[in-house]
Image 1 (cartoon, rainbow, N blue to C red):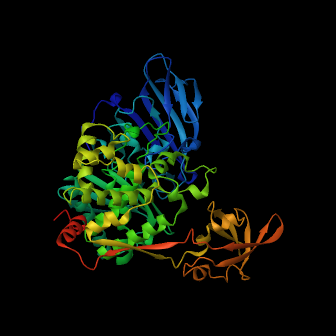
Image 2: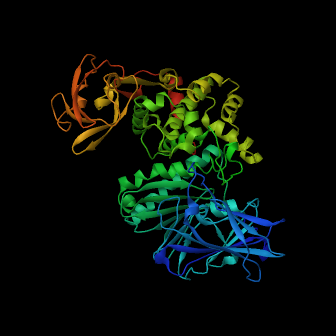
Image 3: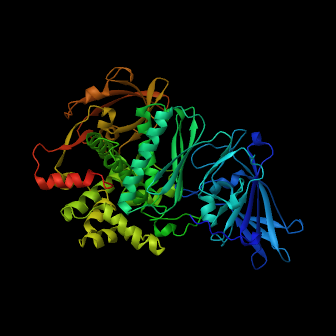
Length: 593
């Protein structure tokens, strides 16, 4: 991050953030900027935030908006959209807008003001001057007491304790910040780069767990940096909101990452290790999405949707690497890694949505993910779909090149040929990168695995690594074996919420909204559906009593085996050759040694 900011006060957009009654959760915000040419200047609050790809309602937090000229005279303004404020320009000079923002949502992507802390994600509450995102910004926080500390990637201007500098609006809103008297900060250095871990809330742990956290983080950093040949910054901040209840949310940023976790997460050795995965995921975003980014998001336009079918790559492949890096770093055993891969494949292979929604369209339709109109049976995550696709893509790259090339090489190519050249990755850019790196065609692979829902050929891709995959009837398939894949308990009974079209249950007339009263004469809580289908043999009969439209009726289901639930297990072959052993070792061994 550069410290070479412009010293002239009028060269930057001047923001202030203050408060007078923190218990009201209201920030007072002002922005002073030179007016644009023409009759008016347009101010806009972002409508979405990077890392969460749907339109959000940040503007609902805005109140008491007003605009004044340099002499304090009110300027006329109107709203032209939910996130847009158009201000009439003064005769000359600057415009200052003032407004309040209600901040009382505590997660890794929102903002809070209370008597304990001032925590903000700038994307929620700072307005932009339309068309001037690349201008430098100065943020002054006059309400920040002198004994308060700051957890932020923003640099302090002239070493002032409450004045911060950003090279652009993008940097300003991509730097989550906690201001608090109770922040605890740990520091470590890896290959000459400073890393800070900030904790707001109660850190339930001792000096030994602090050392373990720093050791784990250092190993993750070293292993990921080895893929790219180093890191693209001089310092980085891991910022944690610790709360006394279950929580698990995190967001990536260009020079930092934000986490919300339960305060007991660092209280023991096992729990410290449980945080490794999310830390690895967010840190890998340092490259994948914060720098290697789809062209649809280059540069960010915060006012409208950025449509791309590559979220499976930005998020899902990041998830794949988050786990792979832990094995390479020695933070997860190889056997545990293979078990986790097996569990992920099992979930997807038994997920109806994965059979009808491709990774590409799951990504493209992320902007519709909050819609109440979406069919529950069609909901699937580009995280899980992309993680599986990342695994298969890495294995295919290794298979086609006999272990000479891998997804690591593709990432290095993407970083050098796109990010370092100041451009985003086009929709066919991942395929093109694979083909450039290997000299092989990947048209069929991407059509089969990224753009469609064809059956996965696991064996072909796993065997060169000395691995095999076995399928067996699931011991926990339950009613999903006949196509009832979603239920919820209601007054002790089961309300049906999802039935696979064409399944045994569907053909018997079952549908959403019906309530199961009995199964084979037993109360739903007494009937063991897992045991009933454990042998996987078709022909079993299931007699249900259903309540619908104030009536009871009998429904008989015949189990055909069409939707039998299976468990998939990846394991090492009993006999492997040197080539397979070499390829497996190259895949999972450390790259930083």
